[in-house]
Amino acid sequence: MERSLRHIALQQVGDTELRVVSDVDESVIRIVQAEEDVIRAYAAGTLVPPRCVSLFVLRDLQPLMRSVPTGARSLSGDPAALADRTVINVYDPADLATCNVFVNRQAMERAGYWDDLLAIRGLLAHEHAHPMAENDAVRTSRRLTVELSWEMRPSRAPSEGPWREKVDRLLAQLVDKLCVSAPREVFANELAIRGGFDAELLHLNERNVANAARSLEGRQTWLARVERAERTGDLSRTDADVLVLIGDLSGHLDMALEVAAFLRAGKEAAAGELEDRLLASVFPALEPEALTAYTALRDRYVALSPGASRDELVEWTTGLVGIVAAALRPRGLELTYRMRATT
Image (cartoon, rainbow, N blue to C red; front, side):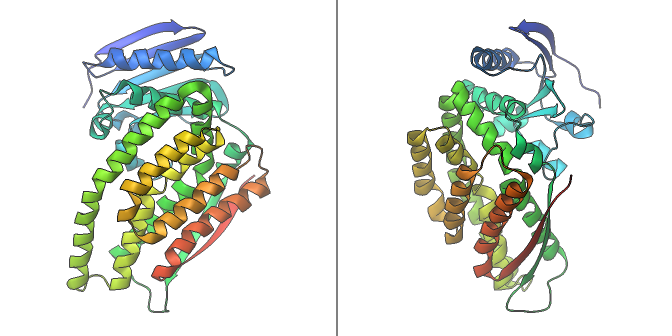
């Protein structure tokens, strides 16, 4: 079904041409003003914003899911996950003079950001940081692939069917988010903070921690479903434990990327404040392996060099996958992995 456009505009923001397209009636002006603020703030420093920005304020991201520009920045994970993205910057790494920023109203409202100007500025600042944060490590990370295989121990016949397919999918998504894509997020976060958006990023992350704490009620529902499956014989106790732990790792460990960025940017107080909130309201409800893995990931993110060579980044990323594997091992899942970097 075709959509009716409600807002089309072309304006100049410093040296940047800003094109705005929207199928949303209200609140578009607030989003556009936040976008202008972000462009001006970056331009006022040492960074060079794109010459042309196309800003799409849409009720959802179905148009993006149907057509991503050829050669554009890779969209990690299942394409269906785009429905949950609040803001995303799609750009061609070979041409950083232009970019396409998509704002997803439905996802913004679900997360509570739509009426929060500080959060909106933080989201836009982070996404605009991606092309400006391109470096050797980021470029190499796009050429990395990880081959994963796993088995349950003590040795037994491999589980088949929906359970095994679900674990395959969750592990692939987990390793991509926390390991392969990590340099892109770490450096974008760090650049946004150094670019003067530390208050916005801290506010955004505090909201995310609050959202995560509220989502723990959903975790209890998930645990109840897993326990019912165990009672009916659809899952073993070991299989159920693995699913619960993978859910905890996937749902919350990406906060290590956020805390590490504040540490890298020299904002120790903000990092400590954010981590204290996590330790108080989120990690006590998770499996204990989650906190151990979070701490190890955070420290490894802090240590990443922007000029990491191919071999150094392979070693660094392999270490991240090793942290994930170590968290899963006590629950009986033995993860085997091999890293490859194409030329």
